[in-house]
Amino acid sequence: MFKSIFEDVKREFTYGNMITRIIIVNVAFFIGINLLWVFFRVGSGWQDTEIYKVISQGLMMSSDWKHILTHPWVLFTHMFLHEGFWHILWNMLLLYWFGRIVGDFIGNQRVLPIYLLGGLAGALAFFLVYNVTSLGGGQEVFALGASGAVMAMVVAAGVLSPNYIMRLLFLGSVKLKYIVGVLVFLDLIGIANDANTGGHFAHLGGALMGGLFVTQLNSGNDLSIIVNRITDAVFSFFNSIFSSRSKMHVKNRNQQKSGSKMWQGKGRHVKDQDHQERVDQILDKIRESGYDSLSDEEKEFLFNASKQ
Image (tube, rainbow, N blue to C red):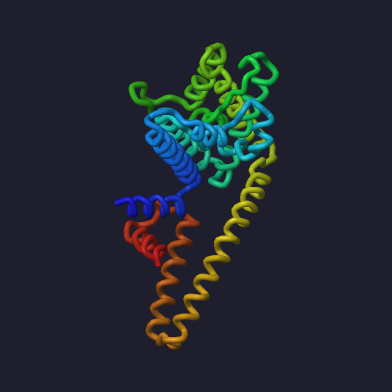
């Protein structure tokens, strides 16, 4: 069962849109950190442990510049990290609803840049509030969650299409601008609350970035270009490492096979060629119309081909 689930998730991550991939990464972080919590807590007689605290806070955004300097990855990991179920549930629902609108209007290639820039803007707002004001009493405070990045997506969708109609349970059809306005207003009044004040500032920082991104895009300045160049360079670096290892493995395996069987036959060659042509046709269809345009038979064929 777990193998089947893993294969389904792998397929969705490989061929799904960017919103699907971001959600999968968030869920993976959520499962991983909670499994660690269970492992350490049960192992210590149902007591919270210092090692779990060190690991979890090593992935969170901090109000202390020393923590950020020694853990620079927290600028990104914090926006994929959730410990509470309701926290990740609402963030992922909002990301799915509004992220699809953004992707449909300005393209799938701009979804991740908005998410990352929104998360970074939220982290900056959180850091400045705790270091410029007396909030926190001078003690180190940690932040986690995708809320800043999600609010960037929410506001971006609202600026892109304010009159877009969404159908809400019990309320019926509501224009997107009113939904976005209510969400931003809740964060504004949340600033005065003693609970999660820094978090609300982070949400507003992300919201500001979402609006700025679309405004700049309408002015001809696409902020996603530089972000995509950086992320592509990072992904290419890691892909080159893993692909080189994979090629070495395949080369060694082929060398072993060649000693026992040098000729595969014309029939096998034609069959392999037809199989590859079928795969290429399906991949071309995905690039043109998206994964959802495939028939059930094509999805199954592609899934089986990915395991070979």
